Amino acid sequence: MARALGTGNSCRALALAQRLQQRTIAAINDGKVAAGLQEQLSAAVNELVTRVRCVPPVVTTTPARPTHDHGKQKGHEKRHEKDHGKGYGKKRHKKDD
Figure (cartoon, rainbow, N blue to C red):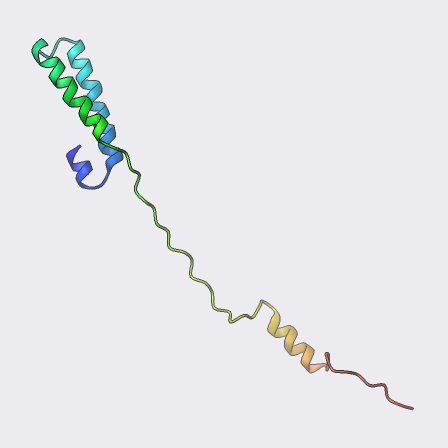
C-alpha cells in the first residue's frame, strides 16, 4: 500500500487497504487475533481505509496539430484555375453584327 501511494496510484492503495480491512475482520472472526488487540487493530485498519482517497490519474491528451492549408479548401485551386482560364467572372459583351 505504501508503494502504491508513493508512486501516485491512490486507487490501488485504497483497494489494498480495503483488502487488508477484509482480512483483518476475517482474522478477528476466526479467533486469530487476541481479544485485547482486536479493537486496536480494527480501529487502525479502518483509519487507513478512511484516509486513503482514490484519485484517478489525470489523462492528458495532446490535441491534434492543425493542418496548414492556408485557407485553401480541397479542390479550390482546380476550380480557381479553371474559372480564370475560361473567362468566367468577367463581364461579357455581345458582339454587334
